[in-house]
Length: 474
Image (cartoon, rainbow, N blue to C red):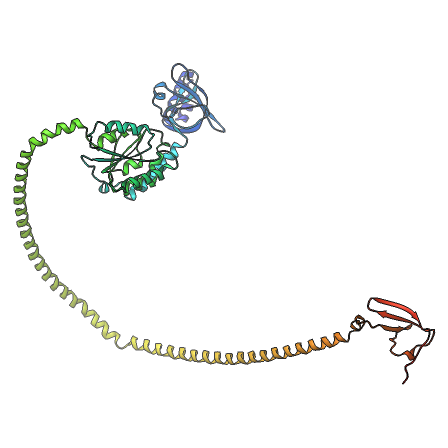
């Protein structure tokens, strides 16, 4: 299309208005519906009620507008600096030749993820059978005892009490308090359901209620712990969560879903005025009901007789047909069996000379013999190795004994050598004398008066000079 426009421009000039109109047509057709995520900046709120602002990210921005009629219907309040997901279409403002995003829906940045997670859980719980209609319980028509699971400070609790105040005076109400918002709410709700259903005198129906809020506020009612507690609850559960447009996975699992908490109270028990109107009608219709019941019983007996007769005739016909069919099948089976046996007999005659079974038996016998011989050889070799190992073990023990004896002998010699150590003699108070040339002096006859000598003690030595010598008498 762009190529066609450029080709036309080369031949005939067009006005700015025509060019702008064509660009507007291309933009609005090509971008009839877009989703844009970004941050709001330069937000203005003129008296006209329209909202003008810029959607930007790190690298680009685009002008946007929310018309007053759309702004009045938005759940999320747009604010400066907030991040949202905007749905709308591109439009071109012809007088200035600028384009902008006309927004029809605004979601918080996390709403898309929550919606995707909601659909994922919805499919998962449906596959697990949590939403099956077959497991849902009937709501009692006139309950005497009603259980309520909600926050005791919630406005929804007050709304429910106001509605139930218009119901029969015999109603008994039991509150099982629980958090209904936040990360701790799923555990609190499931615990409250289990607690109230395990009472000694449990209620006949339970109302699980909470007032309106955003998707994030109601998210605890999409938790598997809450859904599973509703599914496992032995008492019928009516949910009244949020407003009529709000739907949670707890609503899908409940035995009955109410649009609001007040509607849940209305559904669980009829008002007193309605019950008063029913009573006369019930008494007046009692006789007619008995007549119709008697007629229905007669019709049922006649229908049962006709069904029994028809069933008997059908059974006889089926039995007769079954006997005939069984006989034909038996003859056909034996005929085909004889036909199939003929080629098998021919094959048997051809296979007998080959005797594959005997060949297999001979090969199996030969393999058994080889295996037996190999086992015997292995056993003999292992026995010889064991003998060698035993002999080596004895040799090692004998060597160990010899080493131990030599160690003992070495210890004795070391002791004797230590006793002969000269330093040991010095420690006992003796000394050693050495001549000037370093010889050990053992006799007094080796010295003469005037000789120098060195006397060594334990802690040192002294130089001395011989004054005189004296020999011991023989």
